[in-house]
Image 1 (cartoon, one colour):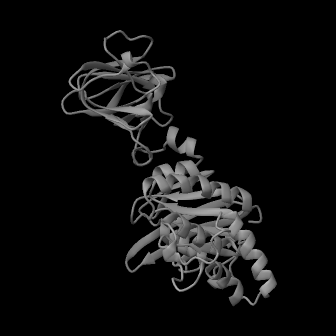
Image 2: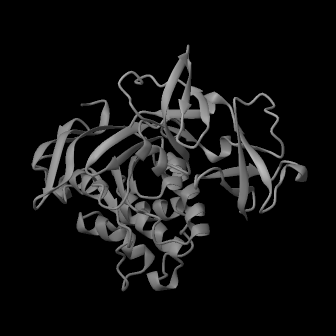
Image 3: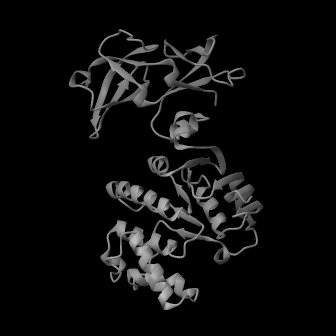
Length: 362
């Protein structure tokens, strides 16, 4: 286990009669930013609490730096935790909030002053040591919570929905800062979140969790581009999908017949032999919109009607009605010339390459 910062081996945790963590095995490498991503009730926060020692597993074993933690109390583990609500002491200044843990461990005044000063510099709060939490913005309060957790340089920093209380703009700014801080301290960060974009942006690797089980572990790119199931595909980013059956194979390519009176050309899935029904996934940014039926080298071309147009600054979002109630979405960069933009009510063709459609068997 020495090569891993954190290791879980067949860990099981019950909450009453409900299984919250179901036979989970995971390895987290030293110095990586690892995120556990899943919907509410998936077991991700329970997994984090098990690593911290706040909960104890009913089965299995947890290792930190090669040492079993099953009988090690929380305060003796080389971990610190940042909670979603920050849990700052309102009657203490920034300095004393950060210094509190060091004081409890009996560090000298000189040591405390040095370590707190370095840590406040790290989180860009060195000019506000005498402020109280109520005098700080949400982002600044988040930095105080980070500083308090980092001041004694734990091997593992556990973050439970760390940016959940922030508005969208501040969340995006803190994502960048959090990644920069992690790179500088070189600790292992384990983050629990239900926010897909956050996990993809921050993480070296991501574990997708649902109903207590780990569904897939990989880099953000692997999870996004090669999901192992329709649940993962739909949970990670936007997806266009349609169900169907594979009618024939041509080497690495196949034809998927759909109930919508059209067929799709796609890449043959590896585990297609036992699949009676498949789902074709096409990401919105892989979709090309054309005003005419000409294929222009695309393997698939379907008629559609523009139902809704949205603008988010860098992209145009198009809601598309295909056939018989099937609705897809296209994301088109604003960098494209105006002639490639469309209006509500306009008839277009949805086009994509066969290898940009992912065929999933479950």
